[in-house]
Structures are given as C-alpha cells and as structure tokens.
Image 1 (cartoon, one colour):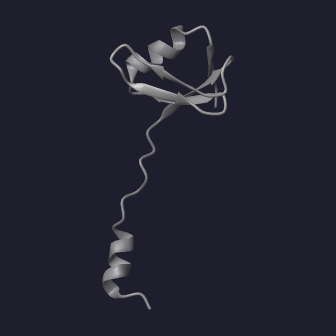
Image 2 (tube, rainbow, N blue to C red):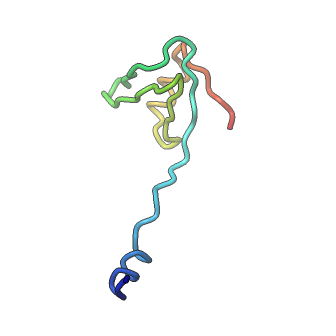
Image 3 (cartoon, rainbow, N blue to C red):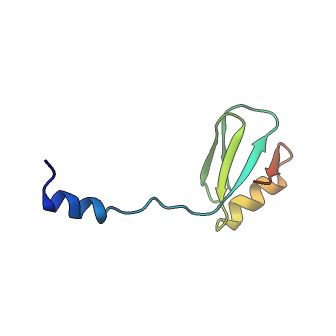
Length: 73
C-alpha cells in the first residue's frame, strides 16, 4: 500500500525538462560525435542529432556543416 508520504513525493516529482530543440539529419554517418569550437559534444544516433535552441554556437556549427540538414518538425 502506498503511504501518504509516497503519494506526496510522487506529486512533487520534477517534470522532465522539455527544452526546445532543433533536429538535424546527418547525410553521411549513422553515428558519430560532433564537437563545437568550445568543446561541447553532440552525438549522432541513427542519422539524427538534436540541438537545444538556446545553444547558438552548436546551431551555427550544424548549420555551417555540409553533412547536416535542419529538419522541420
């Protein structure tokens, strides 16, 4: 049986962070890692990588890279 404390804790559990992201499709590799000039790592998985819209450096990195296309969702 669930206790009152367990029920209260479940209600107070943090909501998953749903940061807006931009999806890019890798036209060459199914999986690889891409690094921004400052060293941030982004992993391509199944030809796709997601970049937070708040990360201007990463967005510029992927927009300028010839192997990536921005996908409209």
